[in-house]
Length: 523
Image (spheres, rainbow, N blue to C red):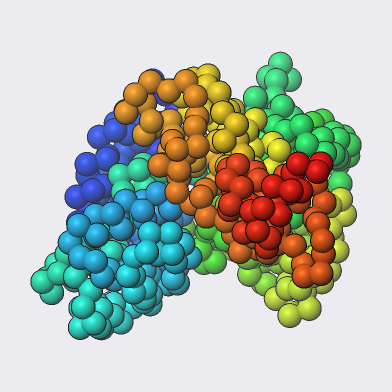
């Protein structure tokens, strides 16, 4: 049942080869939530087909993957959501490939994936990794991998089909879960755009949504307590806020909490990912356009997301990815508090509070001439720097329990060896990585047996990456030469990282097991 009788979002999936079949398998799960149609075309054929259809019908979001998705990104006037595999998808693909060959080729679009290198080291696999930027290069790389003895090739739908046609096992790197995640993202994006264009709700009786609650900033560590205090303080202000932090630290969650703590809490919160929307589309999405602004534009024009946030909060995620020409237009909005639609000469007054976020060093981009200095200073009024999860690892167990409950896993406990394993991991993906782990556990573990406790063997079974000590962590734990004994905190940390294994802890500290035993007994 649709809330408020809102129409279902329309999603067009664009894919070729075996990815189309996988999408069709997953599509029925979203009946009643979206109208989903699969377009079995690629590249220029897909662009021509979509442009022709958009003359007489409409869709909210286009979903695609790999080189096909990147090709569409700057060629059609619609938001694009890309199917992206996560670490667990890659692990499953490598497991399937290993059944066919000990030597495996991996071909990805655009850039190589660091996760493959981690799996290669973890499992001792013979992996040859390559990346391509066009279809001709993909064909050459598949031929090269076969010539050096790869009997199985993991890759996109196009690459896996090339491998099959060449006589080796082609393994699709995408899983049904990756498709489901992309569909969820596409539905959320479609609803956000629809709600934003509908304009702000002005019902004073409507209370702030639970998603904007400060209670969602979970953690008892010093950084999290300080963060909540800052959010309360900054929320009461109407000044612009710049949030910085590594990918996965929860920048949008903090922006939502700032909105919820502000006098604007009953007005719209409109989020825009400046790196996820094509440059050709971002201008019209942000600023809207006037009637007849360009060929194919909607009759009567369209309200942009800045206008849609009027009275509320505009959250600009990944602001460092915004093209320079649009930075100039955004600066005008911040200074003049008015927006000029594409193709219009009449500005529209707007009242918005801007919150921006970035995982990049904006001052470095300013020095390189890739970000306007005046816009940087206009955004950098109130500053929130989010700590990476490794710097408040004591919050990991509490966060994991919350994510497990949200994923439907129910109440459970973490035993001490499992707790030590979680505390010792470096969490390069930050809170997002931890949430993905909780969702993986919630899906996989109950299929084996009812779960009431998380143990170290269980965690290592479903998340082997937790057993790998990051080189930086190991180096930090190692005792420098000439030092007789590390402090108690370093010894405790080494024991946590090694899961209580004294031999491993001694190796990390650069001493013998006997020396470690003597230190422990002397304390």
